[in-house]
Length: 305
Image 1 (tube, rainbow, N blue to C red):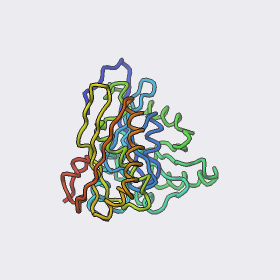
Image 2 (image 1 turned 180 degrees about the vertical axis):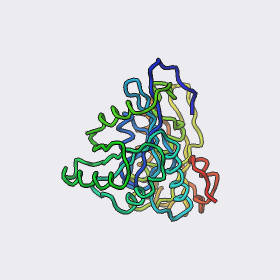
Image 3 (image 1 turned 45 degrees about the horizontal axis):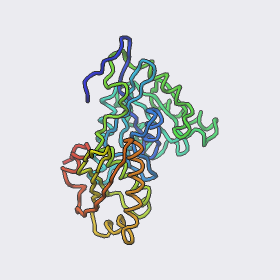
């Protein structure tokens, strides 16, 4: 975390943890509230792995949103690390916002999260997402059910995709967070290092391109970042997979797939960095990387014993 930024008096600031089941729309909502892309979004569940902080300035309040990994029943070591990280992010925040997919309702992982929320001492709010896809009567029933199980301070009905209801949510948070100096400079949107954000962008493109064929175990690391004299940047990244068969999937026939992935990632990075990007991708097989403590440190996760 950076030191407190110089801000005028009378300001407010605080941390709001976004928690919820996988694919509830947390990353989409975070990007909407911040007003820029700071977290990757794919159809694949459990895309977010570590805590990602997105920073929104609303009036005189700096709201630091913590996008946590989706909470689900863990099966592997990596799963356990992600779920532990998510609950840790909730307990360290000033406020916890539970995001529920209104279409799916309260069942499965969402129900289990509700059952565990009572152990979290921070003030809690409920956010029903994707409300543009469901009748209002059903929304009211859903809100009543959730509030009957957990003492939420407020309930918000939003569409992270269209932005409906998001201004009301920001207004509430801006007034509810405590008085205090801002934690980050006014123009900073995330605390994620650019090398890591670049790796996340490439991982997003891999999932978007290979979401049906490629299993969950893929990891991207930025190994080299070179600012060139002509104003461009050279980025070298390694895509780690667990088996040779997965490497062939990522490469594609005559390298066509990895070229498509690289082009999509390069275009987005160039737009984000506002400079020309030379992106070079390499695919390496590292068996059982999900059991390698070094990979967890790279992702910002604690390695579970």
